[in-house]
Structures are given as C-alpha cells and as structure tokens.
Image (cartoon, rainbow, N blue to C red; front, side):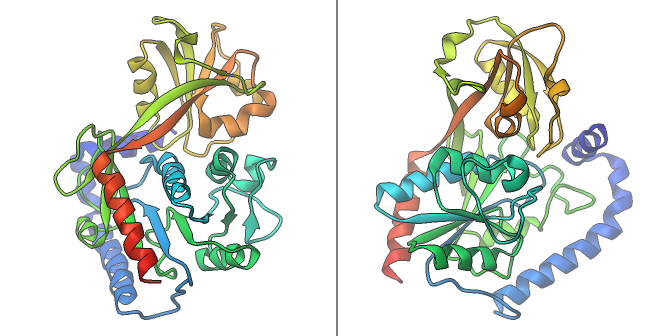
Length: 333
C-alpha cells in the first residue's frame, strides 16, 4: 500500500524521476493506440450484442466512483421501464466457473466486492467474466434484456459499444497526463475526444466539455443488523475509525470530515481482503467504512461497525443528456 501511494503521489505531482520511465511509456502508448485504431477499423474478433451496450469506464488508474454511478444508471433505465443488466470483470473474484451470475447471498470472495455491492443494492442481473462478450451472451441467454451496462470495460475492445461514459476524479484530474508507467493514464488523453460523455466525480458544476456528479451520503448502515440510521446518529465532533479499501481512500476520509466527524484514517489497497483482527482498532471507537468494504467485512465486523451509504447525484444536464441518448439508442434498434 505504501509503494502504491508513493507511485500515485509521484504521478499526480509529476515527480521529476518519472522522466526515466518515458521510453516505456512511449512503447505503452504505441500498443494501446494500435489496439484502439484496430477497433475503430472493425478489425479482430469484436462482438456486437443485439441490445445496446453502455460502457462505464475510465482512462486513469484508481477509483473514480463508477459503482455509485452505475447504480444511478440502473435506476435511470428502470424509470423508463427498461430491463437492464450489468457485466463486470469481477476483479479478485473466485467463482467456480465463468461466466458467473452474481447473487446477493454470495460472498465477496466468490463474486467480487463491486459486483456483489451492485446486486445487493439493485437486484440487477449481473454476470462476471474477464471475457466481457461471453458475460453479455450469458445474460442474454438467461433472460430478455433491453440494455446492458459494462462496468469498467472501456479498454475491452472485443466488445462493441453504443455509448462510452468516462469518469474522472475531479480532485486528482489526469495527474501528469502521462501514460503508464510514467503516469496514471491507461490510454492517451486524446482518447477522451472519442467518448460520448466525460463525468467528473466531485465537480459541483459541469466543467467545460463534461458533466459533474457528486457522491451524496444518505445514511449510516449497521453491518451486523442492516439497520439504517440518519447521518446525525454520530453528532459533530465524534471521533471514529475510518476504513477504506478503494481507489482513492482520501476522498472517503474527506467525506467523513465534511460531515463534521473526526475520522482516524485506515487506508487499505483497493479491493483489499480483510481479516477480523484488522478491524480491531485502538482506542475503541465506532468504525465507519465504505459500502464496498462492508460487503467483505459483514461476517466478522465488530459490534459498533457501520458503512456510509452514498448515492451518485449527476448534474441535471447529464440526466437530460443520458435520457436523450437512450431515446436515440432505442430508436436505432
């Protein structure tokens, strides 16, 4: 975790030593650009589904708030009466076979933390498989769907897509704007010109050429009982242990501070797997974690352990844009 943090800091501060990695970056850029250009030409084994595919991804390493936004997109589709499904790689999951249909009662080890969270929150049909086309086929063979959301599949060019939504952490931006390993970018900055919409997590207003969205805390949820409490369950000034194993733990800690609590931060690697002893902190205080961490800790959480439920709140302009985009997609099918 320490090494990862140092590398992230270097990328976002543009540490001068990163210049030594520029030759490797040049090679990486050539490879990813070639893959993108082959996709645009329709070369290779590309699967086009019989229903619209909406990809939600990013071009940076690290968390950008994809899971809350996907939950918002699911509900936006359902409000229109659409039958929506989700496919995901299922990072870190160990299912018996692939593709694997995620169910709410499964473990995070079996299903993956983010897919399990999505299913527990929404009940959406969701299949995990690094082979995204195979996951799409599995969903469509199991039931009728009108649209499929692809979680973090921007660079998975074996799957044709009808919309590409890219998320950026507004507080960190694109870092030094260099590609791996000299920077945090999975693809060059110019890739953004080819996507349908860019959303900035944490932007209160729509930035030029994009849309803003925020993550709005809605409740505290007790891990053991599932009981929901209002945010004033902990009065201002309450000291608590804050646990986050996400792409940008600092964003979670800042959210707790904005709620006027005094978090003692405990940052873990993204998708971390926990043991019971890792949740025994001193001094004895309430523990508040992300919902993504909660799906992995519920079975052994201490008595005073909670997660902060958050909801994505996109700008009205994006909500209107997405509604119009759905109109176009459905009319063309």
